[in-house]
Length: 278
Image 1 (cartoon, helix red, strand yellow):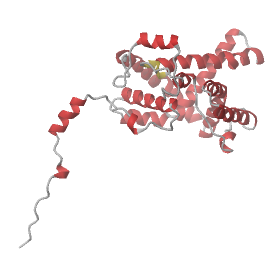
Image 2 (cartoon, helix red, strand yellow):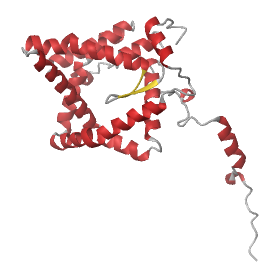
Image 3 (tube, one colour):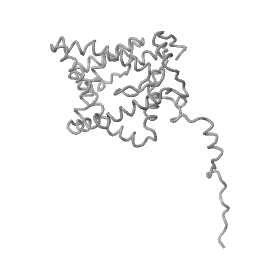
Image 4 (cartoon, one colour):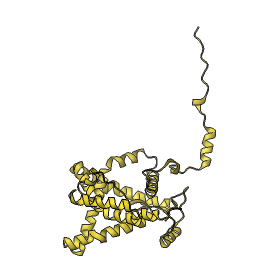
């Protein structure tokens, strides 16, 4: 990717360099701090977000939750379209613009995903991916309060996308179209974000519970799943290739060598000689 998409954004690159050095062997140099924020997020989820999400899931049928999810996906399409353009992907930009127009008009403001029904391709781009597309390193892994797993690059992208979405069309809608005051507009924007978060959390209740139960170290599981997913998205891959996968717990090579010395392969042991019954 570096040969095709060379170039750095100097100020952000400097910020990442000053913030810490992440390597393939250790993408998480701030692990103690990140684990503390992760524990805070888990506590917040356990005692506040998850109970509300369970109530939301109990009250609202799946079809309603899907419609709400479709609405917010469509609401985010202008950001996706803008990042398609910034990444010089005219084909993706065309399809995402068509998705937005189809779902906004025929799909009742996005509640029904008509675009998928007529097989218009869907893309998922954000400013963090745009920075990565043009060669900016992800920087150290970073857990954000409430928002969860990220990196220095993706956290910067999240701020840019959030500001563009809020000040680009959500805040003007509440203030200019609906006519709310400044305080009311802020409250409406926060409330809209909260609904989006709770609905999303309700749709993944079983998946998150299963991952927590199965993972030996849930923090490591979330970290590696996030980093592999982001790497695949930046490289426009449907999933991470096996050769790019890192070991889940970043064991040292010496540990594996010691284990191999103590390991006895019973499957390769010679079978006992069979004796004929007298």
